[in-house]
Length: 519
Image (cartoon, rainbow, N blue to C red):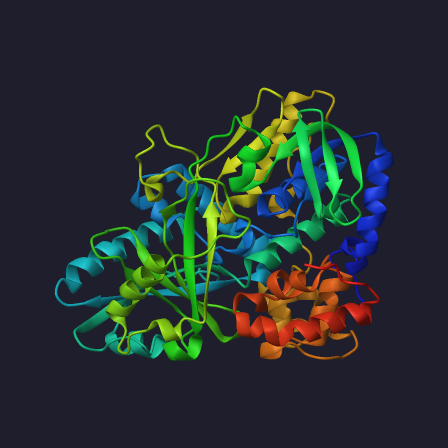
């Protein structure tokens, strides 16, 4: 068996057995260097950065990895085009840099280039095309500035009506004068990115422990409750980092956020003519906001997204409103030959953005900056707030820098994560060399042969194999059937797919010799 980037999958494997061992070790540890609370992309990124710098790191999450906002994104790796439009030059460049790192260094196997087609209709096609094209050219300038190769992300350009309809067959042909085609990055799946980051952190010695809730915290440790066994334990830490996103205020009342909800619809890709591009539809009355169709796994396409302020307590899982569904359908239908109806919507999902509160509470959430900040509370807890999925690595680097600055006893090593491949990473031009089905390579990269080598068994819906399900139990830390269908495979996004997959998921636990937790 060949080794993967100097490590076997077992080095970074997360499992029920490893969880039990690491909880016992934590109870006996006395003190750790860094305690991270929150198992989304920000928290796992911080755990990886800290562990890669040699710090004894523990991450706890009260649910599962990617349980919250990190699994409900648009699955895009943004290059910062929208931030250029609002003159947030620094954030735009940071996004382009981080997109470059994901596409070319850390996760080529989990990312790809996605064409974005903006259809141009009369009246005003020429003016709109010039304005949108200029924006894409500015974004391409950022792409060149950070040295992302044109072979990875192509230059934008104008395409003919015929080419536009070939790429997006569902487009309305009447009055179509052409389209602008730009390019951005896309994740095969956001939850898979979180799991890959968490496993890479574990491979560098971090303890990644799910189903553990932080009951109380301060700058010197936390009181933790194991939701599986009911055990309570106290942990001392030289630094405590709150990476719980929109729930940050529950741990640190000093944190002031203005969360917003972003909703997506899920439709069959066949309903859009099987298109593998993103239809990018301008929102009427706005010069910088769009509704996107986003081709996704399992023959589904996501349509998003909204930006609605959220008040009151934060739910564990957000839900779309009827008005949001109608709004998204209304915008995308302006360019479709056969309009979508409510019957075409297989499901919806919604995530909440942990936006920093503005100086004025009446500011629109769509206008709030996506910048991130590291805030220190009176108790000494460091909270990481704001930001977005694309820039998770930079957020983590800044958070660990803040940890090190506060304690001169910590080694002052710079972050290595710019050049640190995630588990399964393989050079993009050589992904075709991996001896496994292309579908598995897109999801597991260089680990795909290990997945395929597992014994066969009952398959889940939409061609998700028994091997993928068992890998989720043995290697990716799934502790319940819900973990498998809702986060390791994303079958749970559509209720009918979820129901059809439950028996196969349960069988995967049996083959792995693990009793699944109840939901």
